[in-house]
Length: 501
Ligand SMILES: NC(=O)C1=CN([C@@H]2O[C@H](COP(=O)(O)OP(=O)(O)OC[C@H]3O[C@@H](n4cnc5c(N)ncnc54)[C@H](O)[C@@H]3O)[C@@H](O)[C@H]2O)[C@@H](O)CC1
Ligand SMILES: Nc1ncnc2c1ncn2[C@@H]1O[C@H](COP(=O)(O)OP(=O)(O)O)[C@@H](O)[C@H]1O
Ligand SMILES: [K+]
Image 1 (tube, rainbow, N blue to C red):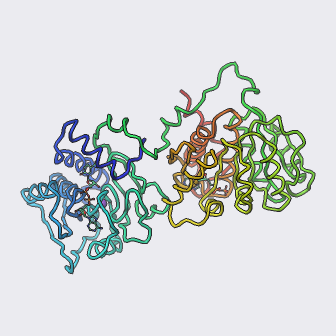
Image 2 (cartoon, helix red, strand yellow; image 1 turned 45 degrees about the vertical axis):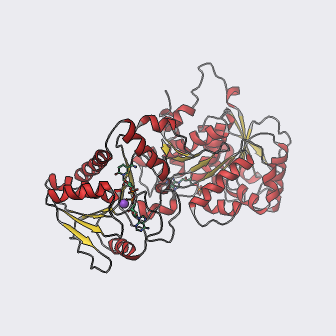
Image 3 (cartoon, rainbow, N blue to C red; image 1 turned 90 degrees about the horizontal axis):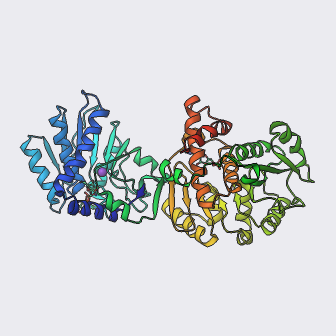
């Protein structure tokens, strides 16, 4: 599913009006109808509504929604935030229609006291949508801050007022929505971690915009949906043998951190690697061989950490490095020789990324077609401090192009920056995965997919989606609190099955 900018949304709207054809007021009626249906289905008969409207088309939606709620027999009051500009034509038409339906309307001018919102009433935020052009100030900001202080549930129409579709609103007044009902497609601002407090749960409502425009329009960003990921998945040939699925090299673990190595190694084998050789410190050999007999051990000469590259490097077709390795100078030297000697794609995670951040010259050794998997803190260590997630995704795309590799930015909607310039947001995963070790599982899984011959972009799309899906399946048998990274590995099989044709 494509992610459209505010400008593209306007063009999509206009294209639909011209080509369906449909009057813009009728398109607004359709959008408002979807919202009213959602509100009626989610809140019981006894719930009343207070709809706060601006004077643009977002406000027009609000007026139409209020009329529909009244027609359905619900209590619905309307507050219009007065502006110096005249209302948009569709706002003015909906104002007439609401007045004809005898809706109660309160006009809120600067300096007026904000009307009381009854306890239990749902606040519908139709103040501003994609047309907002500057941060909220004056009485608009005052109203939003007042609404944020109320205990009432808040439902935002299209965007929480104050949020921008395509740029950061950090530090600005923004409505804190419990739910956001957004039209036709997700907006970039609704997917980024920094906006999570404002968006609440996001619901995408289909309002019948032109499919022809959607398929013909290029976007920088897309959602990694099951459909997209299925198109990148490679089902196995019935006559396949282990030689078809690669030999992965995984460097992981140190004294006290062999768990990280085991989680990554198990995920690598459950992820389908034909063979796995796991480079571990001497203290970890017994642990690995006992807990995971399917993996081969490459013992490091050092007892507690990784220091020395294994003699033979040509037999592996990909390398995963990082989980639990620490950042000692000996391990840094080992990473340097790995990057210099292995001519294969890498997955670099955790301490491998921290080592890269300490020594920029390592980055230039990274072979094209690799995958870096930082979480936001590791990301900033690698690429410098960022003020916003909007800036981070631009940096990720620039780095992906420069390195000709995939750069992830892990989070609720993990961002996948491809060297082609495309950016994808993952759609699977949950807060149960916020536990040390989830990232190690991802490293093992991505290494497995590279071993099987996936290119970096496909491996990242398929791997990140599977990792989150395994988390979603695992949480059905656990809880968000009790989920363990090992449960993700245990549900990887069921997650893979969802991609089968
Ligand atoms: N694109 C679509 O598919 C559809 C869009 N619709 C609605 O239309 C909205 C966009 O409508 P508009 O373009 O009229 O824009 P909005 O209604 O989002 O906001 C623009 C209005 O706010 C004012 N404004 C902008 N920034 C301000 C600020 N910082 N302080 C105070 N006032 C400010 C503008 O002068 C204008 O009156 C969407 O968010 C959606 O709710 C729907 O009606 C139907 C379909
Ligand atoms: N709230 C969440 N929603 C979806 N995915 C999550 C959430 N929290 C964590 N994850 C996923 O779990 C993984 C955590 O990785 P990371 O932060 O490196 O953890 P660790 O290094 O401790 O294993 C990432 O892939 C991330 O996307
Ligand atoms: K809004």
